[in-house]
Image (cartoon, rainbow, N blue to C red; front, side):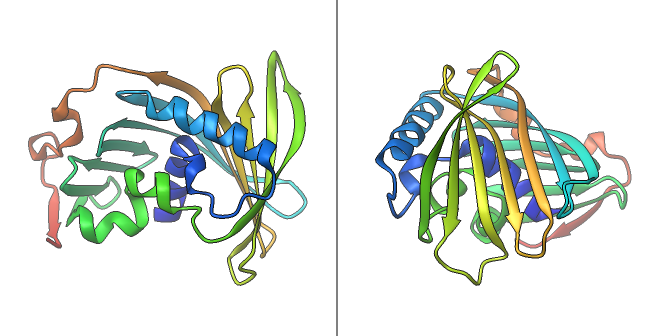
Length: 216
């Protein structure tokens, strides 16, 4: 589940400046524009769909989720999992067990902290190129193909689709070496939404009988 959330957030908040190797200047120009657009937002609410496919493209599962981000704060809703972060503390709530795990941002940052992912997720030697334009309904999408230089990674290819006119991320498809494919599509992205700081703090009173696991 943590990997799902991590990749979903990365898809929404991807930063072009984090790509270590520039293989294609045209691809870098597209990614730089996406990064600049995203960083101009004071807050963001994004709804996304997560789909798992096997090696032949058969859909194995589909889920929907949302993420709200404001500076170093964020809140994620994804199926039976909810995550709050006020910039210092992370609350990870599992509905099935009615349990919330509490940890510091420092210890959780390697897995689910969006602000870290904006600059660190793709910092390990990717080669990338612009494959050209595609049409998806009324949208014109620019496809960027990314290949990790480190062949020991669990995935061998990542395809990023960018909405050409909006200069925002449309989808990301991760191809694992095992054959599975993970597709993340942004269904809607609303910038500068009303995001009070209380939204990013776990409110115990709303979860009767919740068990707390404090790892701080």
